[in-house]
Image (cartoon, rainbow, N blue to C red; front, side, top):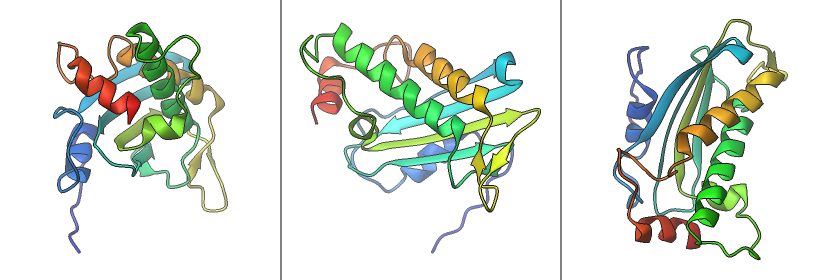
Length: 173
């Protein structure tokens, strides 16, 4: 078993790249990521993500550099934001017909590798072992940040949109 220690200087993008190092074919080669200050939650959100052709989801979440194995409001907000962005993109590009139901979060997150990290002035941890973030405002803030960042194209890794065939393969898989 390989063990790699991550320091604070490592970015969420490098963690996603490491997690995908020996996995299946990538939907797109670049890791999409952003960092944003969010005064409504008194903190910062950092997100990195990339899809692979796989059914496995790998979403890792952190609050103030502490792993949140039980997830929490930041992870729920991330999933809400990704789901909203992908569904909006699919409808805008007519990859989903008006009569089609929205894609489910589970379907959208198939093959997704992501890191969601928040740094908060006053984190509220829940659960028996305090492994779940409970700050209520965080869910809406992270969801909005993800939706806005992925708004043009949830599949872009650089300035240009991904090819329609790559987008369609994710949505129709």
